[in-house]
Amino acid sequence: MASPALFPALLRLGDDRLVLGHRTSEWCGHAPILEEDIALANISLDLIGQANLLLQYAGEVEGAGRDQDALAFSRDAMEYRNALLCELPKGDFGVTIARHFFHGLFSVLQWQALSSSKDATVAGIAAKALKESKYHVRHAGEWVIRLGDGTEESHRRAQAAVDQLWPYTGELFMQPTDEAELVADGLVADVSALEGPWRAQVDDVLRRATLTVPETAWMQRGGRVGVHTEHLGHLLAEMQSVARAHPGAQW
Amino acid sequence: MVTREQVFAWLEEVMDPEVPVLSVVELGVVRDAEVRDDGSVLVSLTPTYSGCPAMKVMEDAIRDALVARGVPRVEVRFVYAPAWTTDWIPESAKAKLEAYGIAPPGARAESEELVPLRRATATLRCPFCKSDRTTLRSEFGSTSCKSLWVCHACTQPFEAFKAI
Image 1 (tube, chains in turn green, orange):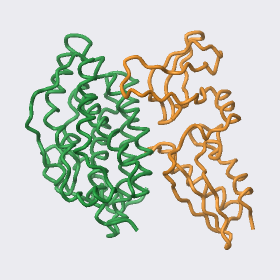
Image 2 (cartoon, rainbow over the protein chains, first blue to last red; image 1 turned 135 degrees about the vertical axis):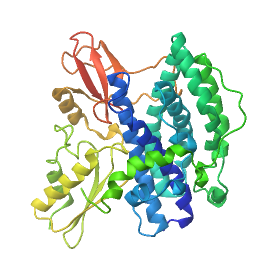
Image 3 (cartoon, rainbow over the protein chains, first blue to last red; image 1 turned 90 degrees about the horizontal axis):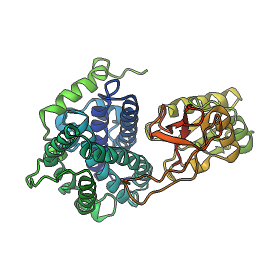
Image 4 (tube, one colour; image 1 turned 180 degrees about the vertical axis):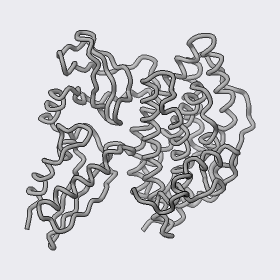
């Protein structure tokens, strides 16, 4: 039987994907071209699918009778543990792409590390999700280069997106203190160790995109302990409205 | 009492709801079927993609098919490791895909580079006119498992099973 101590770590993993997946689904029917509409909807589906597995397992290790639906639809913003980066409004296409690049790259590194977790379920989900996240980061990375090294307008907006999101990237690598034992036991990955490889890839792609890495050193934080921006509450209000209006409904 | 082989033979008749020329066995989703002493059957499934909406439909169809054949109780469990791969689709099933108008998965081209500047993709053969003059349009198609291509010889857009 898996350790209940895994619960907060699984929430952080699952909530990142649920919130980002839901946020990205806002593009469905609104993307600039048909191929991107399909791509973003596919990416949302993968992320929500990953969240489904992670929150289902979170509910099992918690052992309080909550399933993935209860965790997704019955928690308030303060109980969510996603990084702030995931909940920010979708912005323009440049912001959406830059966020997918930053978070997708983090995810690839995180799944790589987690695929050797001593918890077999975590390792299995990670190995599966890794294949999907590689597609996501390739898609986003190619767009970062195309937009950054594109027209004057696409360059300006891509740089604005990078500048806007940059202060929210640091939180991805802040290792939560309540996971120290899990890291020591080889159950979850130490995210602070992922920052170096992440930064090397980001530097490389932004350079090819003729974009500048911001010099901001101060980083926003809070999501991992339940202190969120105002945006998460609005997102949850929409996402949870049907489930809250019809508690326990099956369809 | 039914045998494991018999269960697999029945499941060969359960088709993928999105790609109805492939059975759930040919797709590689059915990993195992265990017949227990009480006659109940435990089917192990590995999902193609984490968010594939067809998984639920396949699960229900598998359950219905076995119950219709008189299996008293069917249990379905999901196995995530090893992760699903298109390598599990047999050559015979790949031919069916092509005949149906979907280019079958080729060899997996794992690039070392996460964001390659110039992508080395294997060329796929157009399932309609068999030309190799084809281009990948998008890695994301009408379902999680497919990408969008276009053929320059017959100008036909087509879908391909992504090799993962």
